[in-house]
Image (cartoon, rainbow, N blue to C red):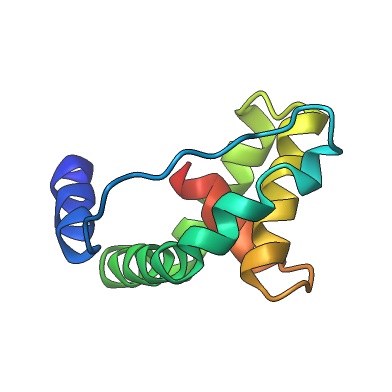
Length: 109
């Protein structure tokens, strides 16, 4: 089922030639993906919104929160990875920390 959902979401995203990005691993983790996030911001937000709707249509809010809590507890979440996701979520939220976006990115990553 998840594969069909992902294919449906991908079909909605406009397809273009994939640009090349330089990810500088010497930067702090939260700053590494600014360029990528800026380039794909609208697409990322659209995909997250679509996936959020799929979850809403198929699961209760409590089930989703349990899923996120389980991921946070059991997924090997290295501090560096966490900081990268925090930076991406912050970029998508126009520079503001967003726990909701962080959870969504973690859930769909």
